[in-house]
Structure formats: structure tokens, C-alpha cells
Image (cartoon, rainbow, N blue to C red; front, side, top):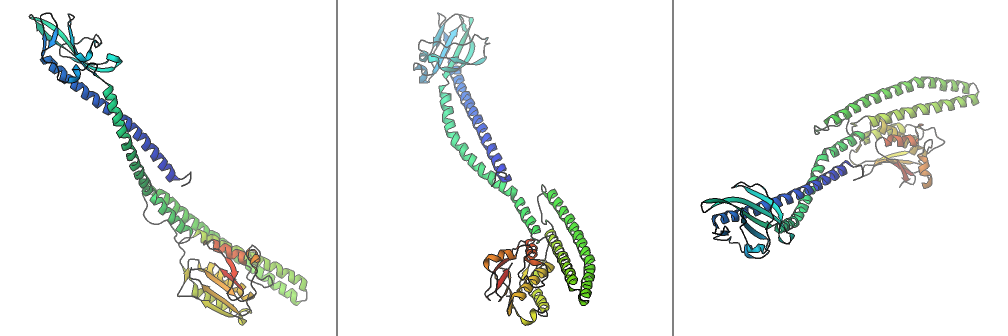
Length: 444
């Protein structure tokens, strides 16, 4: 995945979202756990407070006391973190042994009988306490006396419980993050799968195996596929028009060129050989240019048109050889074919005939006695001869524009450079190598 990869961006975005979500979830769970523990602690304090109310009395001196103290032994352990304190408006007070010689400092708030208030106060040893406070009215000598009861607990236990919870929570969230990351990876892969299939279909159009992007696609990218298909259709029509114009131009030039060649022959018959030679040279150069532009028009058409059907190789080669055998060079040569079964290649028939015709013609000019055309097991087509061949250092130059294997012969004027341009349209490459017959082998 590259820096601009859509998949990388989605994965990075998903990972960032998961990390943020897990952090927020961790903080939220820790706060909820602390709140739950705090509520549980206050509930326990309220239970102890209600038990104390049930055993509350005031002696003759106005001192509050409990007939039965809370059963939790921590109330009797000095500075244990669990405390109670009872006081009256007249100044009487009693408290748990755990407070030792300390008092619980509570705010002077108005507290109606039966109301319960909760406070955060500082207790012994500057400990942070959570306190539950309630006022009840007790009758003393037939006189109603307000009594204030306070039960408090150290919050250090809450903090310790929170730390223990977080230490257990972090590995669980990390494991959850890995699971969510894997799920995100799979989800993104499945989500981008249609784009991979779309890429394969575009490659099929580019390689000529299809004319349009066919097959079902998700509704989100269906408009894109429709636009691409519309573009392909418009391009196909434009290429067809361009090919037609090129063909019309070529046909329009062929007649003047034929007339020019006829005039050159007349001049040659009259003895003006120098002028005739120059006219023939100009005519031949213009003809080559026309043929080259026609070939290029076909190449552009091949690139723009999809859905090219496979062309059978054997019948086309036989047709080309039947013409070549009647040529001046072909009459003295033996042409052989080496095909297994009925091979075919996904190249337009006209383009394949242009390529093979040029290669067979070149091989015929170089061969001593044999030319062989065949198809290898890997689907590559070759044309070879038993001529002198070309030095390995010169083979690359032979495919350059304007270079020809035979500089003396008439040739078709197309040249191996145009052969390579035709093959480029189909993703194929022309290579020249030594032939088993002793000459040169052209493979594509």
C-alpha cells in the first residue's frame, strides 16, 4: 500500500477511530465503575445509619447513645477509615472508637428531619471521606430533641478499586482493539473488493477482451461505471470516424501516386532516367508515408475498440504464404509451418496479417532456402529463416524507426518499428533472436 492508497487511508482512519473510541470507553467505564462503587459504599453507610437509628437513645444528661453499636468491627478500630458520629443541638455527642479523638467536620446545612445528605469531608489524617448525614427527632422527657447522625467512610478504597479495575480493563480493551482492528481490515477489504473487480474489467477493456464494463456493481459506483461506459462508447465512435477519415485520405492519395508512378515510367521509357528515378523515389516515399499512417490509424482503432475476438493463426498464415510463394523471392524458398492444434491470438485479423505479412516478407528476403512460421507452447508466434541473421548488437537497431532488415529490397514500407507499434496496442513485444535454422527469428 502506497501513501496515497485509499485502503491505507481507510485503515488509518478506522484505527484512529478505534483508538479514540477505546480511550473514551475506558475513561467512561472507569468513571461508571467509580460511581457504582461510591453508590455501593453510600448504600452500606445508609444501612448502618438506619440500624443506628433503631437503637438510638438519649440518657438523662442529654447525651445520645446507641444501645447496640454497628456490628462492623472497623467502627471499633482506631483510624480504620469507617466512622460514625451522633450529636444533639444541646451539645451532646458520642462517636465511634475509630474516630479516636477526632470529630467529623460537616457543613452547617439545614437538614429537615428524615432528610439524608451526602458530603465529601476531610477526616482523620487528612483522609478524604464520603459522609451520609440524617437528622431524627427523639423524645426526651416528653421534649422532642433533634439528633444528627453521621456515618462516613474513607474513599481510599474507592480509588484502590478503580486502579484495580483499570488494570484489568486495559488488557481487555487492548484485546478488543485488536479484534476491532482485524474486523476493520476485513470490512475494508470486502468493501474495496468491487473496485478490484472494476479494475480487472477496465484491464479487460484495455486489452481488447471486452468492449464495455460489464457485470453487476454496487449501487455506489454504478454511476461511475455508467460514465466510463459512455466514455468508451463515445471514444469508439470517434476512433471509427478517425479511421474512416484516414482511409478516405489514403484512398484519395493513392490515385495521384499511381498517376505519378505512371508518369515516371513514361519518362523512363523516353530515356529521362534521372528525372524518372527521382519521381519514383518521391512516389515511393509518399506511398510509404500513406501506408504508415494507415497502420497507425489501425493501431489507434485497436486501442480504442474493445471486445476483439481471437484470430485463428493457421488459416491466416496459409493465406499469406500462398501469396508469398508467388512472389519473386518466394518461388525459390521452402515455407514451413509448425502449429499444434488450432492456435489463435487475440489480435485483430487485419493487424495480425500486417505483422505476419511484413515478418514473412522480411524473412523471405533474407532466407537462403527455408522459412518457418510457428507457435510456441507459451502462445508466442515466431517467424524464422536460415539466412545470415543479424549480429546481436544490431538487433535492437533493426526495430528502430526507419530501420529495415533488408536495406536493398523494395519491402512493404511498413518497417519493424511499425510492427512493434501494432504489437504495442495489444501489449506484445517484438524480439529478435538467433534461429535454430541458422538465421534470424522474430518472436511476438
